[in-house]
Structure formats: C-alpha cells, structure tokens
Amino acid sequence: MNAITAETQDVPAAVRRVVDTLAAMGHPHHPVMLDDAARTAQQAADALGVALGQIAKSIIFRRKSDDAAVLVVTSGDLRVDEKKVQALVCADGAKLGRADADFVKAATGFSIGGVSPVGHLRPPVTLIDEQLFRFGVIWAAAGHPHAVFRLAPGELRELTGAPVADVTLGS
Image 1 (tube, helix red, strand yellow):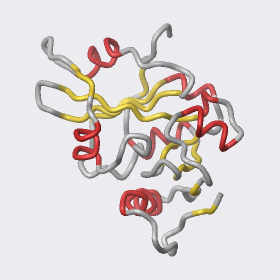
Image 2 (cartoon, rainbow, N blue to C red):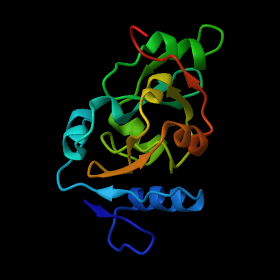
Image 3 (spheres, rainbow, N blue to C red):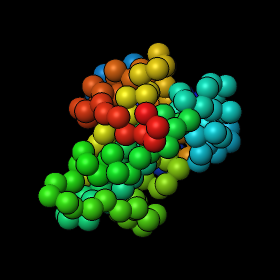
Image 4 (cartoon, rainbow, N blue to C red):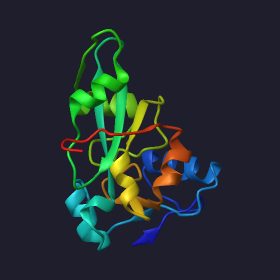
C-alpha cells in the first residue's frame, strides 16, 4: 500500500478530489493505493486484512422525483433495505430506483467500485448505516477501485454531515 498525499503525482482526477477534500477537512489519514483492485467489499477487506463489516461500501440510488443521487454508506457485511432508504429520503410516495453506471459516474464523478463518501461532483443526499458504528476503524473507497482511506464512523459523519440511520435488511 502506498499513501497518496497532495504531493503525489499521477493519480486519477477522482482520487485527487478525494485527497483534496480530506486535506481541506483536516482528515488525519491519507488515502492509500492497494496493489489489487477492491471493487467489492470482500476484495477490500481481504486486501486490508480487516473484517468485511469494516468496509464502508457506498451504494448509489436514484431518487426518481428529482433525479437526485442518494448515497448510502453501509457496512460491507450487510445489505441495504431500499424500502427503509426510500422512507427516509423520498416524500409523498416518491420512489427510489437503482442507479446504473452512467448515472453514478455523471452524478458523483466516480465509477462504481470506487465511489467515495466525499469529493462528489454534486453533493448527494447521504445516509450513514448505523451498523458501521460497531467498529472503531472503517475503510472507504477513495475515488478508484484501488484507492481507500481509513476513518472512524464518527469521522464519516463529520466529513459528510449525513444522518446516521437504520438502513439495512434485518436490522
């Protein structure tokens, strides 16, 4: 793993946005580049040697009423309950839908597999899974399938300003 700092050259623009956002917010941990891709939570957990639940996976939905991106940052060992998310972010019976790769890229500036909780092109509606707080340390994508950064769940809340909610199946 190699740390990525403001001085690091030749990193993708999406990673640079995350590095710059974290630096501007005073986050103490630099993103790192993994040797292998971590497009899935399991791949990231394996590469980092951490529990699957410590991976803060970013799931993007599309709010149909206004075409807004809805980001749910959830624990890697759990599945998002779309109905719970819809109840939290959609008013008056509006619907939530799946976001395809083109929508995710256009709305966030990140490709699926590298969606960071910070550094978006347009700020999404964001929710944080309360189950992430089971862990003292979690890892989130940093704009690229090889890039991740370390943080605590409370730091995730501070960096995003997002509410913490029950958003998973069976919780």
